[in-house]
Length: 83
Length: 354
Image (cartoon, rainbow over all chains, first blue to last red; front, side, top):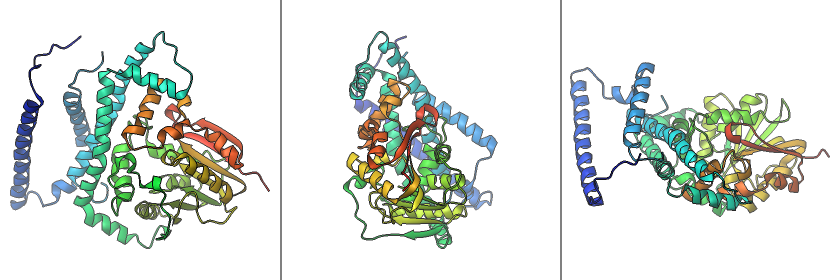
């Protein structure tokens, strides 16, 4: 089934502005993760290398694999493909 | 965990690998269904080039094909850059591993005067700076990009779900004998096929030549990690520097699609020279276009030529490799596929006994 189109007047500039907005928000989140790691290291919960050196358990690897596939299908699979 | 690998590199490689496998499995299947529908009632032209051209024409306008090719290209661009970034994060541990194993893994002879052929300067597979674009590119290619992204298939000739180290072992055991004394690998690279050869023939002495110092250095580390001692030498496959009649098995894995036709001829001639009378030459590479399971598969493979820095790929897949071996003097030449979708494709022959 053909998916209807609503954005024929949208431009690449519009898209680039949205991507830049996502980059800002992604960076704010990344910055917060680094801050959290430092705070937790300061409290003795983590060492500097705990997260970097951590090998996910088999259980977590399975969870990560499932979530990666969901992300791939949600984002990369979003364009309309052949029927 | 791989040497020096941190959370960022691990997560990045995992995502790229799953993207490649997903696109290879789902989008390619969708595009192939489209091509099959458009092929109904069509008589394809004779000749590999004409059939490929028609395949591209029929896939024109396929969204699944366009997105799959876009993602394939993007992953190809990203994988080595991600590898270089991961190297930076783990450089201290990686250097320490090389240093700790400096005295192990056999002998590495580098030749500062080796003549580097023009074709070798290609940035194969979009590797920034080519095979020696970084002093430890061998490590980056072998341990990170190939082990963590390529290994599970979906890229190039490797079908999703195929493990490419296994493909080397099934090639290695295609020698005619159960035992060899002296094996030479042409284009040993980072030693992945040499390792398979050593596992297949535990008593054999492995020799390997290549042009890239960083690949040879890594091959030596691979030997050291596995407790083996190999003789590694920086040399052209066209001029190995070994004496005539030295090896009872001379072999090459995926070398021939990386070299132009005149070099391929010179390499086979050199292989004949260094192989002992009664010895064998075993080549594994991507199958010729005519041996692929579908027109879609041929198109996807042919695409590599112009889009993933594989300038000699098309020429190699159009070459009659059996005739190439026979013209150099090899006899009893056979050709066949040993893996899924005829990859690897074996061409092997025997040097007549004196």
